[in-house]
Each structure stands twice: as structure tokens, then as C-alpha cells.
Length: 159
Image 1 (cartoon, helix red, strand yellow):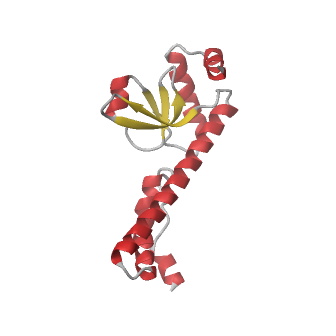
Image 2 (tube, rainbow, N blue to C red; image 1 turned 135 degrees about the horizontal axis):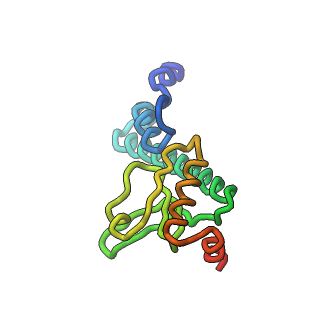
């Protein structure tokens, strides 16, 4: 039975990195089917599947953020702040990582929330996780463009 389940779902391949969205799209049917076999109650089955998918997506997102942060640090930038929120009092947006003073954020999903655009944040899409140097270059350029040369950004991050 295990081999039957394993052959029905193909891992995401093709253009684009493995994102939490692609992970959920590729594996959700398999996870839901497996949880239906494990649980007798449909409600418990759905809860189990949703919990498993949420945990998998969080783990993948955390790994992407960690790799991105390490690439920035390796390139001489200070450690970015990770997983923080921006609010305008009514709406809330999550930034995977970024630098608050120059208002430069890095995201791993698609699109930028309207709140961040209105607030003046410059969001860099880390779409190509296989080429972190591109993200580093775009972040460095955005930080400098906003008046924060590397020495100033490092000084701000220390204290």
C-alpha cells in the first residue's frame, strides 16, 4: 500500500523553486488521502492533514529564511530581522526577513501585500532560491538606494 501512495504523487519539478505553496499543491492530495486511511472520523482526518501540511510549510519556509539570511551575512550584510509584522492599525502584513530602518524586506511568496506598498517598504522577491547571490545583490542595491550604505546599516544593527 505504501508504494501505491508513493507513486501517485510526483514531487514538484520544473521552473521555480520549491516554495510552501508548491509543496502544499503537490503533496496535499497525498496527505489528505493518508490521513483518511489513519483516522475513522472525517473531521479528525481533515484536522490531521491540515496540521501536517501547515507544519511542513512552516519548516520549508523557515529553511528558506535561514538560507537567505546566511547568504546576506556571508555577503557582509548584517543579520536581517526575521518573521516580523508591519501594521497600519487595521491591516497586518508579515515580512519573512528584512531591514527595518531602510524598509527593505525579503519575501519568499508571490506578490507584495498592499499594506507594505502603502507603508513604503521595498520588497525583494527571493524567487530564485538556487541563486542567493541575486537576492543579495538586489537587497544590497535597495538598501543603498534608500540611503543606507553598508557601514551605516551595520552600525544600526549593532545598537
